[in-house]
Length: 223
Length: 223
DNA sequence: TGGACTAGTGACCAAGTGGTCATTAGTTAG
DNA sequence: CTAACTAATGACCACTTGGTCACTAGTCCA
Image (cartoon, each protein chain N blue to C red):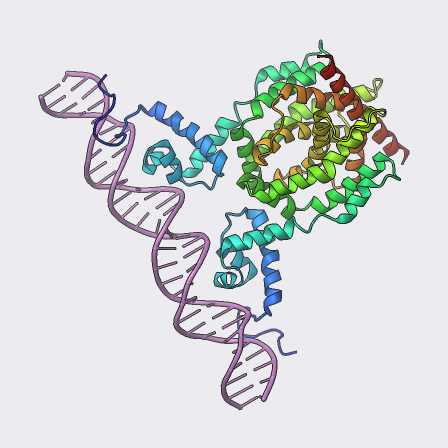
């Protein structure tokens, strides 16, 4: 074992093959920036990784390039196609579908890198956020709103959900998303029993939203 | 009119009395930091205010002092005592109470300085946030949870609400808070009809939450 | 064993940061 | 009109930042 326990001081220079080093950098950067925000410095990051900051610039020409890479890693390639199936499985009761979907989703999302980076990005106006939210609207909020409309008015079959239905579905999403926010942004102590939390929230939604929607639609129509 | 239209160039040096200058600085700083985040520089801020950055240090010994002051201005002194009355007015139906309270609250909150600064502060771990959320829990979430418990189980009279009831009330709060977040953090286009939004959300809550709570309590008891 | 290849570094640069201070110039009371 | 008071400034300091580059030293093949 040639590489064990050096007598003379310090972790000497380590030579990694470029591929490994790169993933090490990207992963480290994800963690680092999510803690500190994207104003964190390249030198600090390098120190954490135990390398010189010059090396970072060997792998990424600018800080921006690294940051872009971190974003990419965190969001894109993070929508699990299986979720679509869960959400649209006609053979399952709506409650069950929503509970399953949001439990999976929450489990994937409820991590500091994800949540904090997302919020940092929102504040900075990074456009990846807006793209992501559009995706959420298309894949989750709108379908849920359609389902909700059907529950509220079983007879009607409208393709596009009303504004109120969308608002209510965004409400569900926001409510669920607020759990990781409370945990990772505001540092509050909150449940870790994600499934119970989702079940509770979804039940409330399905018990209350159809009535609220009917109410809103009829008062709007009466005007 | 001695001070009108100088022929020779530039807005010359202006001499304000300290009190006015100070409020001008604090207000400008609130706007500036809420846009840029607290990593914004004192020089930039000064340029925006049309003064030299040295002057800022005449009024605030350090940047931190200014930031503290901005926080103070934005949150503390921003809980309207009238809200307590609205929320606890036994003579009014719960729906109406919640709608009124949250409409007022949302109107006060739904401004970029407030929302963005709050979120920036959360990410940075500023303790004022945690204090504020404790206040919300004490003044809003907990009372709402108590009310909710009463609605779900009219016979019981427990002083402290269950975990599930609290969770549901936090859900309501999160859902409502998510509207300004979407507007000011993620830059989405969302309703400006706050009252209609609150009415919708509160209705959904009151229609759905008691049932969800009963459900949760009985399955927990059955175990 | 010795070279060639190249991952990794230290020292450096220009631009920006928070913060200081001697100096300048509006304003007003006498 | 002048002198005194003090709001406001410009020039400066030490330090940090993103980024560059000539050099150093692991590793592996001949």
